[in-house]
Image 1 (cartoon, rainbow, N blue to C red):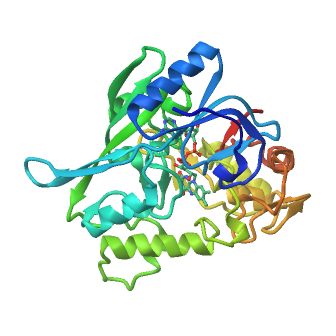
Image 2: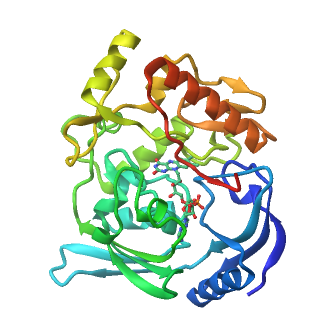
Image 3: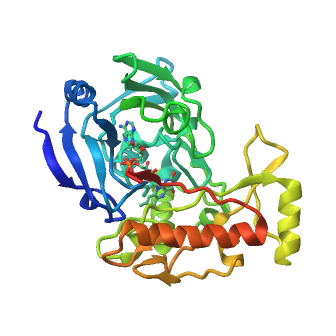
Length: 349
Ligand SMILES: Cc1cc2nc3c(=O)[nH]c(=O)nc-3n(C[C@H](O)[C@H](O)[C@H](O)COP(=O)(O)OP(=O)(O)OC[C@H]3O[C@@H](n4cnc5c(N)ncnc54)[C@H](O)[C@@H]3O)c2cc1C
């Protein structure tokens, strides 16, 4: 295990901003993970687990601790005894989108709408990654992780992960406790694609049943048009994807918002367990509060393709991104009394 000092973190993130890590190490084996965690404990150093850096904003001062980058590889696929499902056990350091592509080519359904999301497999259970009507919580069977409190490897069933909208125990009650080593996904062999979102339905002629591969391709195309796909040279993708979560609010507050705005916001279900609430698009609230695509504050801006993505326009400091985020939050709060929650993980602030 080779621990580097003062490693720049900006190039390891999609935002491309922020200062260095005091110490940095990459783990290609589970034993490296355990050794690195023990090293941090011995040094009494803070520990941060890094995947693909696609949901991360690093402060300008960097991180005064050990950054452990997960590079655990390997994909093992097998069928369930009744052959109805494919179980994929995937190393946390595998590229998520490449894994999605493999599953659609093998005709296994359940994550085709999550195509084009950057980052690693290990990052997906952390914020229960979701898009276009799918969330990983519906297909994750179990998560194998190193429990840094108990100092042992554990196997957590999906029911023990505390999944909800963009949340799990890994980014809430047990933040920083578990290092995800691998994830088992249970996918439907020969299953039909999920076509819940109008954006996606519009791509296909009514009555036509697209293949999983066609749906994954369509999702990537829609993402690209919104600056939500990492494309070499596209300045709109120097971001962390959506910067704010879509707020989940009561129907009464939603009605008050319509009245203030003088128009009806688009509404989505907040999930079967929250029938009394609705999910509103944060992008709509931001636009109604006076911000348009392409808005700039110093070297930080709102993507020219999607109001929800804050972008580094080139050489931005983390403080400029935060200043823009705060300006947007306070405008939405004073107009609608809704507090927007940031989605990316803030490191070193
Ligand atoms: C252009 C773009 C589009 C995006 N679109 C979406 C979208 O549609 N839906 C969505 O949900 N997200 C989206 N995201 C956000 C991001 O891609 C996902 O959250 C992704 O899963 C993060 O994975 P990562 O490996 O990059 O994690 P990182 O950014 O490296 O880390 C994020 C968090 O996960 C933790 N973590 C990472 N790996 C591990 C591990 N092995 N063990 C324990 N903790 C770990 C980190 O400590 C950190 O707290 C988008 C981002 C971008 C840049």
